[in-house]
Amino acid sequence: MSKSKGNLVMVSSLLKKYSPNAIRWLLLSNHWNKNWEYLEKDLKEAQRKVDLIENSCGHLEGVKLNLDGASTEKFSKIMDNNLNTPKALEFILQVVKEKSFNEAMFFYQMLGFKLPQKLGFVL
Image (cartoon, rainbow, N blue to C red; front, top):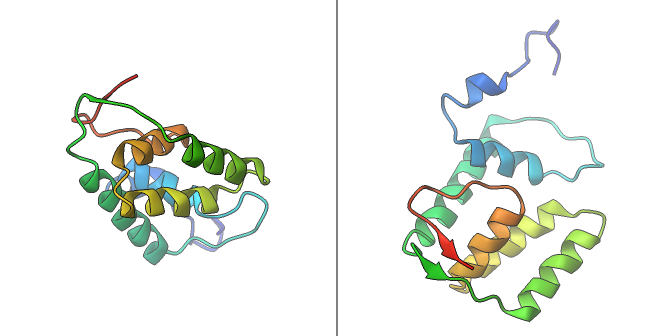
């Protein structure tokens, strides 16, 4: 992307159409040490995944957070492997599919995602 080529996309423009969490998901879905190209279809897919996670976990208001030591260790190993955020995002989706919603939301927050207002945890 380049301003001179006219293909620069501003975050302020993206925020009119996509959530901040979707933009974060897109950025984290690309490894920090690899080049990548922005494609709107990828941002649409990121928004779909964020919506899936947040809608799946939407019933957790005020839930006491109990973490499985094995999943916490697996998440730590993924992140310790050269800050592999794309793999961490895949892991969160897998945890949601396994219906471990409170763990999914914990890891989601660990990556800096903001929880919807209705969600909250008691630690």
